[in-house]
Length: 640
Image (cartoon, rainbow, N blue to C red; front, side, top):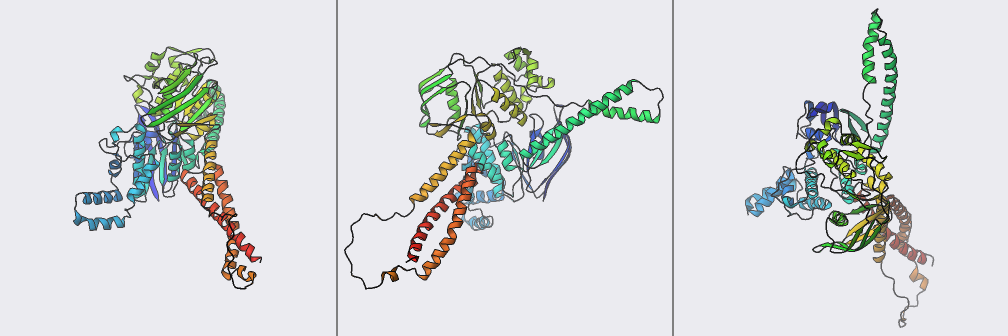
């Protein structure tokens, strides 16, 4: 089924062209990722398709049988309603039926109930509440009565995401999801659950995300927006990277070829032949086409994080017996650690367990309840926090940077002006005179990173640094951090980012328990799966029937009929059939157990599928052991 057509779409923002004459189609089942640099127009394109904004020219056609659900970067919710009321506060056949049914019960309008109950039956709406709570629970929204106005930004984004997912779960089958950064404010388990949810065959979506694990797991087509043009790549994100590299290599070769031809033709043009024959006139006309190709700007401007680092002394940072709680909620319970030079530590844990509080205690922004935090004298912290830039008044980009300093020292010992430093961070001359409020979310993050690195920190603390950063900037940041000689603490839900950069993890288990795991996220995940699998085996073992004690008193002799013992122990016809059947089942169960084990140790499973496999592994292990015992018993008797 054809869902949408986008034809010759053009859009500018404050006289800056974003995209020009772009065209593409959306078919049922398409799972499309839109990738581009920050400020290239990704969010603008999504908002145009969702009907929240208009293009300068071009056409957007959406099939009238398709329902569009849109997750905005800054979603609008009813501040004076609670979480569940916001979920019920939109137009959906099942939601409407549930709302009307509950309203009739609440106001004792019994005469309406028969028709409403029939409608609930027709829509299969009776399990609505349990399924809604399952989605909300998967996104860590457990207090359904909490008012939106008291929610954090992350809670609001997750509630808005839940609202969209519930809409498609209980709406018509023809749903088209448009999602702008759906993985922001989600932890690892939530991202895996969401990837599994969106991978269903009936889901059609167009999304913007900088989470490469998520893109690989969900999307089957990549749209790349670059230099106002659109490039379509079929396949996953890894395939897109390969095709993009091939395209850039081809474009570079074509540009070099055009430049060589241009130099040759330019020399000919300078001779200015007096005789204007048809042939020479044609060659002169062709020259201008060659000139246009040869002088086209190759976008080789790269973000450069070439900054100086303050020398780091022998003593870095010591935490001794640190305790921190908020009421009954424990964050740290006697935490001890001595940081070493060059350490790269990742912090993981569910939302709300205290990861950001831990960082603020280290930085001295929050006081510990007890214990000692001793930073070294030479330590200069650089803190990239989730709140982003904080400005009293709106400023132009260049004014903001000049307020920090007029000149900036680089790692090679040279200095550059504020304007030159901005250019290293991919802020063009026009952008430098743009008000910060007009920048995209990713551009603001890049400016925030610039302001932090200016202080020449030797201990970087990065709290969700990947949110809103484009893939190009992420790659450069990763390269910079790999070469960085100072200490780094990273809180991130970007699996690729963490795997590439951290040496070990502080795992926040909750209730103040923090464990130190020697490895990256994927290694920790595999270890956790092995632990869960062993727990399933142990549970199956515990549920096995207990064998009778061996050392018990012999019973008194009982008179029995004088009947051959062999006749009593031989298998019945039914038991012979059972023995044969078990003999056929055992190899199948062993094979399934081996296959399940191989899948589980891969560590690359969607969240929901992994939990199902762990549960099945326990069931198969239990069945295998029970059938092996029964087979041994029957086989022994069959040999009598």
